[in-house]
Amino acid sequence: MCLPYIGGKSQIAKKLIIPQIPKNIKTYVETFSGMFWTYFGMNLDDYPDLERIVYNDLNPLNYNLFLSLRKDPKGLLEICKGFPYQKKGIGSTADTRNFFIQSQKELYSEESPIVEVPNLEIAAKHALILTNIFSGANPKTSGYIDLKGKYHSKFQSFINKLENDKWCEKFSKITDVYQLDFQEVIQLLDSPDTYFYCDPPYWKVGEGSYYSNHDFTSKDHLRLANCLKSISGKFSLSYYPFDELREWFPEDSYRWTKMDFAKAAMAKSGQKQSIATEVLVMNY
Image 1: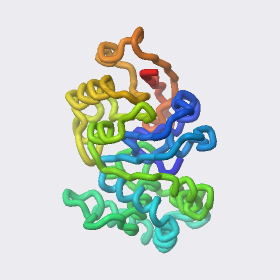
Image 2: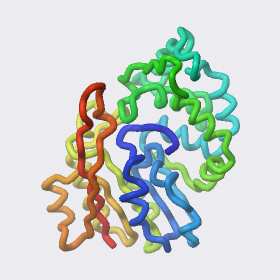
Image 3: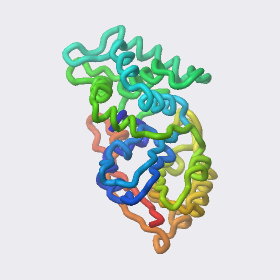
């Protein structure tokens, strides 16, 4: 994984999603890319015809982060190393905590702080915030986690990736970074050689304030279903199971595969993690 994020697929990408990706594709697209976890889990040598790797996310902070990763990971590295952040053996200080709070207020205000992209400093602050909250939590509203010096911080792990040539090579292979509505990017890139991995906000979860940049309503879910039914390319669609999904993509017309996993975002101290079922629906 690159960074923790809401709805990320760290647990199931290699076991459920990646084994289902066709090997003969020329264009790989994630319509709701987030932190691009599925792409980062892929061995690109398994896809000899792959020519185009497309990141797309409507969130301007995610869009800016991946433009920065693709264009200037070493510049991003230098900015990250200059920030105050938690280190093993030292833990949180007044500087690290205050910098987190100030950055959170700056980035998640009503007005976007990004004027021109890529903005490396804002990309680095976004990464800092994502790595100092609980995995899968909303970065706009979540509080700062003090590791008390017991562990290496996830921000340090991110810095390590920016220093790693193999990770930088993976960043450089991203050919396109978009900030488009899912329907726009599907219609723009659809072809018989294109594969779309679609991981939308889950049914009923995207309505309200859970996602920091926009709602995803029942109408959007239906619009996505209708859009995917009309494409010439191949798609895999991630969801938890719900009744409408079976109406849109009947199991006798589309291929379904399922996997149970523990929901890390729901784990609390002293409580057992809840188990969820992930469904992957495919048109091939």
